[in-house]
Image (cartoon, rainbow, N blue to C red):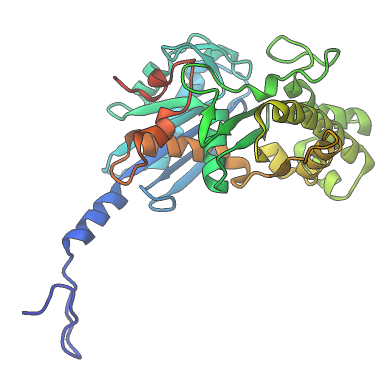
Length: 357
């Protein structure tokens, strides 16, 4: 008898009989995970198999201008249904990257980007959105930093994401810092100018208030003398228009000040700058790197500053990483190395990832 995978005689039309490893592999490929990166102005969704790229699909959409939480959740539910389609195979898990400040129970305390979400219990909300599916939520900056750390193969890293706001995280020895139960690394709220503009958090001079996407666009409009959108700023920076370069450089200098202060404490091997705004504006990251080098103390080596490996999708990759490692089957890292053991959300990791122990 011929082996199941042996070819037939010349000219025969034999069919390869699936072996046990084939069937196992197909079951693994059928396992799907959903990543949700929730932002202040837009949301990114990605569904993928157990390995990135298998059975995948992406959707990005903008929130409506009026931030009504009920309308937001209805829109999110519709987009998720549209992405998942009519496939019958269930999701193995969902990872959600959130920028809001939450308590230990997963209830939103405050979120300047969508104020109407205050008081919303994320566990209940996502439970209704995806009934019967395990959902893990965590801070978007922490997740992005961990995803970038994996992608860059760097265990000591500072990640900064520049978009509607500024977020990020620190990875030390391959793990999120400061660690479970101690909150998230709020890079965007490092104060760089005590006399600076008022931040959405209520303080003045946070780097987010000076160097975020909206702050840079406001500065560009002032220098240009008229309203300026993202595409116009990106085009102006590409063409070296003085008003665009000045606006970008001032933001980059403020971000470099925050990065320098953090590096004096954390001493990362690498700084990666990402987020949709930084990734889309020519020269932004290079300007940050130049300012960081100028701020380096004599006798010390400047830290390397590079564009994020994952571009503007770091948090989305982090959400998928969380989904796979919190709820995946097989081929998972040891418990101590999993993202689900490492990220903080609302100050309590176990609540963040839905663990019951």
